[in-house]
Length: 178
Image (cartoon, rainbow, N blue to C red; front, side):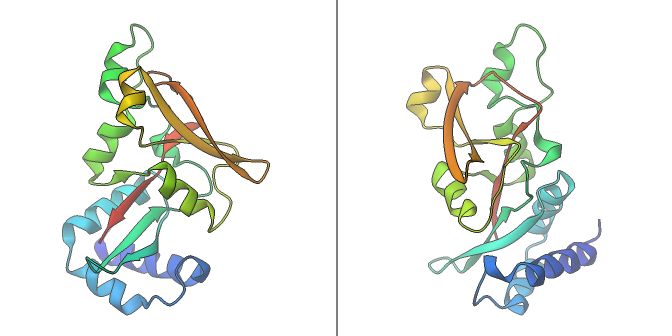
């Protein structure tokens, strides 16, 4: 996908979902995008893997716009993965091809925290059939676990699993500051 194609796609998504970014002006966002080629590459990766990124926040201190994955379900190109490399390598059989933290780093994005995931869920209903790994506190990870979230019964749930587990319906959502 070329830069202009991506910018046009993001503009259309922005216009189609004004409830996610009330008071934001597309021209200012586009100017930031056009002056940050590395961020455009990361947005292309978010889009390529099914994330459907859209701007949902603005950091007044840094002047950055914040894009989140806004696909209705956990991005399809980022599912069937365990939490991190340590968990991936610990599997003796049926190792997944990748893991959430390495994929996020390779894409130049951040995995959502539980708080950020809840912020996203205030803008719509996401992960009604899937679930998404979220940034796991170190103390949980040291004990072998990881946390993930989904939305069921009009409620956001936080669960735990072994970090080495993976399922076809679990991926991760990310954010990018531009």
